[in-house]
Each structure stands twice: as structure tokens, then as C-alpha cells.
Image (cartoon, rainbow, N blue to C red; front, side, top):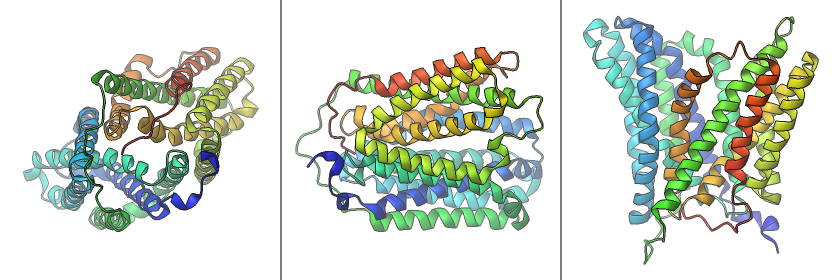
Length: 400
């Protein structure tokens, strides 16, 4: 029996759905936070410039904290057999701080220096448990079935990321106190559900896993490079789609049909998972990236705006295929027992990469369609190289 047709009973579906619940709770918290943050700061007399400064500071913290917490969770997993104590502590701190933000802001200018500190501490707590939670995906399935687990997780994230903001008017109507309390309760329920699905702590290995600093360094650099490709392609694609709709009365599909976008995203995640289980996730992502290069270059040369929606659909599908492959890639290429730091490096670097590329690329308003197509093709090529490099080598069993 080949790995592609291994029995699916070995997949811990309850744990996968519990992790998906954590993913949705995290997204809900960040959506509510971004929605209300300007109002909270205005209550204590702080303007939008301070909000922007705090958000930039959070990005700078994440690039250090996420891989660091991933590393700490890796070590905790080795020494105690479980990452859960770190996750639980960070979740409890985040839930308490989230509920405390509205009362702090309600005190007015007297808490002008306290509120930014509380906000930053909340963001740090949220960043502290993301990579330890995501790396636990490796405990849900065998290597060959890991794409199924990643597909469910990312499909949930895609749905939550698109659908939760549709309820912004509802969140605003309920008020900041009730809304933030709901966000905290959902997070606590999610961590309780996750706790019920976790296996007993693994016994400590008799010998430490063999690894080298060079191997780990190459892995972390590779995850950053992929983050550059993902962020760069996203920026270029947004501008490319915008130019295709310039001068028309049409509304870009991404904005006009958020429900359709959510469904396309979710189904593309599940489709990528099925293909990844059959043919290998890295191979599927590499081929999808090559197809995206051809699509973007062809569209930029033709300039036919009528197919802009189809181009957008293709880009959404490709982006979700890449997202499904990220965690399996990190677990495969990282040294055994260092999957958390690899995942943390990718997600932690996304924000900083976005800020740097935003400064380097500007608004791209003066770039032609052909130029945008070439830039997008280059960015996707970087992603393809990041996933495809070393495909000829036999993958090792990740230790998570």
C-alpha cells in the first residue's frame, strides 16, 4: 500500500477541527481589534498617528517574538512532551487583556500612557501562541496525510478571514465592551476544545535529535524568502487587478462578491489538500506557481479587461494553494524538532516584509501592465523556488 492511499483513520480529525477553531478565534480577535482600535485610542485623546505607530511596533515585535515563541515551544515539546502550557498561558493573558482594553479606554485621558502598553502586550500574547498552535498540525496526521490537515485548517482561515468582516456593522452595533468580551470568550472556548483533543504528553526521547545550525539557518532564510515572494506577489496582483478594472463600471470581484471569494478560497484549499496528498504538497504548489506565472504574464500582455474576474479567481486559487503548503513545507525542511521556529519565522516576517516592500515598491501606480506582470511573475517564481528546491531529495519524517 503506497502512502497516498494510507488509511485515513490515522488522521486526528477532532484535533484538526479544534486547531481550525483556534484559527478562527485568532482571526476574530484581530478583526475586532483593528475595527475598534482607532476609537479606543480616540477615547484617551490619541490620534491616528499613534495608532499607526503602535501597529508598526507590533509588526517589529512579531518578527522577533513569533520565531522565538516557536523555538521555546519546540524546546518545551522536547523536554516535557507537550507545547500546551505555553499556549494556554499566552491565551489566558490575551483573553484577559482583550476584555480589559475597553474599561481602560473608558477612563479617558488618565490612561493615555496605559492603553498603548496594554494594546502592545495583547498583541504580544496573541503572537506568542500562533506558531506553537500551528505547528501542532503535525500531530494530526502522518506525513503523507498532512495536506488534509493543512487544507482543513487553511479553509477555515479563508472562510473566517472573508466572512467575519462582513459582520462589522453587527460588531459595531453591539459596542466595544460586549464585542471584546465575545472575542475573549470565543478564544477561551477554542483553547478548551483544543485541550480536550490533545494526546498525552509524548515521552522524552532518549537521545536529542541531530541537527546543525547551518540547516536551521538555511530553513529560516528560506521561510523569509517565501514570505517575500508571497507578500510581493500579493501587492503586485492587487495593483494588476486594479488596472484591469480602471476605466470600467465594473467592481472587482474580490470586493463585489466576498461570499463567493470565501467559498472559492475554501474549496481551493480543500482541492489543494487532495492533490497534495496524492502527488505531494510541494510539487503541487510548485506547479501551481508555474501556472500562475504563465497566467499573469499572458494577462499583462493581452490587457483584456473582460477576463479580469477570471484572472482574479485564478490568483485567489493559487494563493490558497500556497497557504495550504506552507506548514507541511516548514515541517519537512526544518531540522527535526524545530518546526515551530520555522513556522514562526514565516508568519513573523510577513508584516516586516510587507512594510519594506511597501516602501520599495510604492503604490505601483506608474507601472504598466507588462511591468506589473513581470514583477508578479518574479515574485511567484521566488515562491516556486522556495517550495521546489530540493524536491529531488527524500523528505524526512518531521518531529513536531
